[in-house]
Amino acid sequence: MNDNQQKNLQEIINHLKTSGFVYQNAEIYGGVVNTWDYGNLATQMMTEIKRLWVREFIKRENNYQIDSKIITNPLVWKASGHIDNFADYLIENKVNGKRYRADHIVKDLFPNINVEKATFSELEEIIKTNVKEFDGEKTEWTSIRPFNLMFKTQMGAIDSSANQTYLRPETAQGIFVNFKNVARTTRAKLPFGIGQIGKSFRNEITPRDFIFRTREFEQMELEFFCNPNEDEHYYKYWINKCKDFVQLLGLKNDNIRIRPHEQEELSHYSKGTSDIEYLFPFGWGELLGIANRGNYDLSQHMKYSNESLEYLNDDGSKIIPYVIEPSIGLDRLLFALLIDAFEVEQLVENDNRIVLKLDYNIAPYQVAILPLMKKINSKATEIYEKLLKETDIRVTYDEAGSIGKRYRRQDAIGTPFAITIDYETYDNNTVTIRNRDSMEQTRISIDEIESYLNKFKK
Ligand code: GAP
Image 1 (cartoon, rainbow, N blue to C red):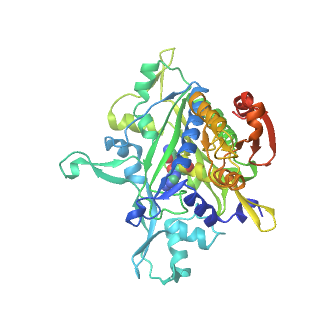
Image 2 (image 1 turned 60 degrees about the vertical axis):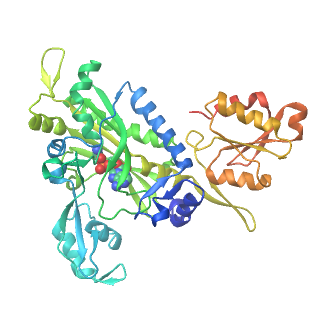
């Protein structure tokens, strides 16, 4: 069995909660079901993941980035198909009024059934015939019905259906409706991409598995516009790019796989989709997706807006570009990175350490400054201040408790290096630098600290 499936998810979640990565949302009021806030450590990581996404998907690819609104004209969602098609299969147990996603029940209880291929009525039949008890209760199931995942809201002060709109369920549509604006103002030539990072909202029937499936989450999406005859080429290109990206962040190769969707499970807009899946402790799950959306979205927006979103070729001919979309959920990626990094190591008998083996580039802190003696700390504070104020290195400082305890605290939050300032530092301006993973210590001069650390920058 792969390592990851032996990891105890509850232990990981407890660790993330107690060490300050994640807090229960509105905890002092009893919380909100499966809704989490990110603490300082997770927020630092997410900032770095987003920075690297911008570097890899926008800057280095010569693409463009926008920031569109969460609440928009509801016609956008009519045109995109979300009002009519964006639904999950809801089934209710009449005994206690609890609602579930029918495909999740079948997937959990009958792992051999391919739920992606099953129809509404097949799922209903399986559940009604076989699931007589669920969640510790007798069952009396309703029929399955589609449940639209869009969050409804009102725009403006008048509470009327004319003002009803939605929180966006994906960032992608904000890009499609701005396609013409971006093409005109940048004078970009095909192929080119437009990306954005932002919050999306889905009224999930059963948010679950910690931050894997939540009702509010962040996406990093790129819509890559190309000539219709180039779609296959760029579809493969972006699949590879996404795989490279998650590996750049440090995910282990053994824990990721590419899964092309079967015809039956393709979304209403998709000509082809591949997921990159991650081996979570609860099994393989979608981490991110790459879809060939053809010209579905631009065509739909042309139809509903009566505006041309065609692209003018140099020879004067017009086309509706095809779109390849790599779409990454930031929260889910963060979760996978934390699970991948989490290890409990036995050092000597009865002595374990929890260590997060996060890549240097996304670790919340990259180095910790630890003066051996609290009373003699002038050199330590000097080094700390210099790294803090004069470099981009994420640095923390800790002088409380024994040096062993301080190393463990840093291991547990994933700090790759710890610098100890001792008596010798005052004699010859050298410090020890400890490697989190090997726990080896090397002596280097204070002047070398920055260049030593910068070697790990990708
Ligand atoms: N624009 C295409 C799109 O939104 P999707 O497969 O529905 O496609 C893309 O979502 C990614 O967004 C997923 O692969 C996942 O990483 C993330 N995602 C989707 N729903 C989510 C949820 N409820 N909670 C957390 N992440 C989610």
